[in-house]
Image (cartoon, rainbow, N blue to C red; front, side):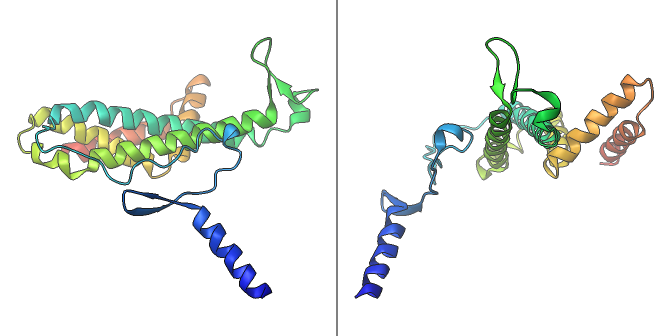
Length: 204
């Protein structure tokens, strides 16, 4: 009897965690405490409704690629900031566990959570943009795209792949270059990356 009751509880809990939409079964993660986890939004639709009459113009792919690149840059810098901020001891920078001035005072613990939210939100945005740019519905227009426009998009997507492989590492390199410039030096990493990118594009 007790075993049957336990089995029923497990089954009920399992069913409570899923919702049904138009004949499909979707599993939704328990999002307790969402008021402090705004970066973790509810999952979107599993499919899109794209009418056949809609024409995807290749020239509109470039701004999406630029948005994706900027988003990944932002993600890298946010992750770098969070990584550094978590290593800062509250007692070393604050007598009351807060930072900021009038109107902008925040608890250090809350700030760490905000950085995590920013990181999650940017990560989700970049995943969506990346999937869109790689989607098959853009492919039919590639053949008719202006060669220069296609080259621009390809260059941006090369940057995207470089940053996407490790956004935080990319951001830390950029920040190291800035620190080097501030000291009056010349960053070998920056020069190497620029030269490598030029050679890759000139050999195509």
